[in-house]
Length: 117
Image 1 (cartoon, rainbow, N blue to C red):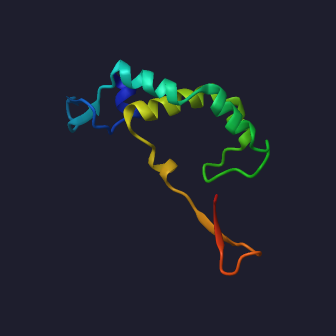
Image 2: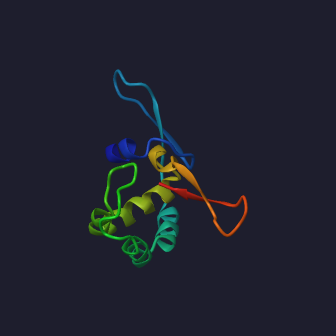
Image 3: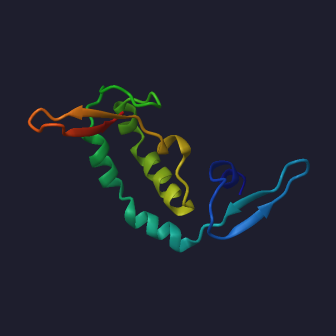
């Protein structure tokens, strides 16, 4: 339960209040077996592998500083992390941030294509 509280502090499925001496109350979610089964159906390891392997190995890193080559070594772990995010209904704040750049499409007047980094 301790790891659960540390890694998934916010959710809204079935709430349980945990209270320790000197610490504020912390509300956490208790995931059900059905939630894990559904997330397993959605996040297939071969699909994650295919997606990450389409990246060029040493293309520039994202905001987190992680190169695609490292992501390819961590596919199994990423699969578990993605499943946990879906099950717990929580996406880390860092994953929700993106920098958008707009690229002018030369063949179309005043047409811009967004790209993220």
